[in-house]
Image (cartoon, rainbow, N blue to C red; front, side, top):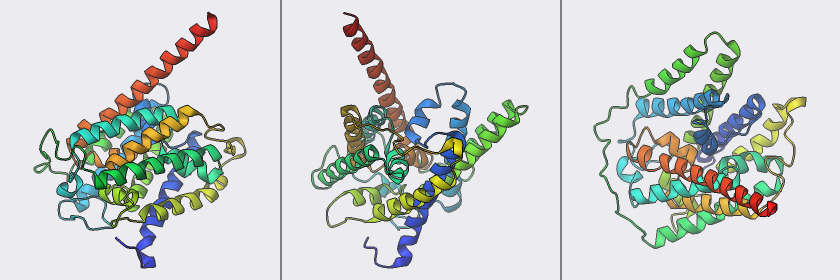
Length: 340
C-alpha cells in the first residue's frame, strides 16, 4: 500500500495516540509501564498485583473478541483499515515452527531487555530516554533485517504441523469469556472497593490499548511484515503509528503525572548493557519473523484459534521463564565466584 491521502493516515495516528493514552493512564494509576510481554508472564505470579494484570489482559481480550464478533474477519481478506486478516492471508508463508521460534525469541528477549517494544518506543522515547532509543533502534533494525531476508529467502515455509482449525468456530459470543473472567475477579473482591476500582480501571485501560492496536493496524500481521521489509511491498504504516504515539505521550505523560508520580527522564532504564542489546536483538528477530509482538499476539489469539493460542503465546511464556531461570543461574554463579 502506498499512503498518499492525508485521510488514510488518520487511523494510524489515532491508533498510536490511543496506545499512548493507555500507556500514560496505566503509569498514572499503577506507577508501572504498560508492557504486555511482562504482564502476560507475571499474571501467573499470584502476587498482589496479579489480579490487576489479569484484568488488564481480560480487557484486551474482551475488546478483541468483541470486534471479531461484530465485524468478523473471513470476509475482509487483505483489505486495509480492517482489524483482522482472513485465515488464508494470516497463515500465508508462515508455519507453526515460525510462531514457536518467534514466540520463544521474543519472550527470552523481553526478559533480557527488561521490556518490549511497547515499553521502549511508546514510553521511553517520549521521555527522551537514550537507552530506550537504542533499544528501539536495535529491535527495529533486527526486525527489518529478519523480515527482509524472510521476504527474499524462503525459510521453513509450509511446515504447518496442523491445518487451520477455526473454520467452524463461532465468534459471536466469544467476548463473554473474558467478561466472565473479569466478573469472577470482581465477585471475589466485592467487599474491597479499592481492589474493585483498580481492577475496573485496569480492564478499561486494557480495552483502550487493544482498540488502539487494532485501529493502528498492528493486528494485521502481513501489513507489519511489509512495514519491516525493505522491498517493493514496503508499507510506511509504522512511521505514522509511532509518530502518533510518541508525540502524544510527550504531552500525556507530563499531563497525567502527579508530583509523586513524575516519570524520571532516565526511566525505564538509565544504562545500556550488553544484556539489554542482546535482548533487543532477540526480540527484533522474533518480531521480523512473524510480524507479531506479545501484545498483538494476545489480541489475535481468540481470532486465529488454536494456532496462536497454542504455538505462539505459550512459547513467549516459555522464553520468559527460560530467561528468568538463566538470570538466576548466572546470578548464583556470580555470587559463588565472588565468595571464592
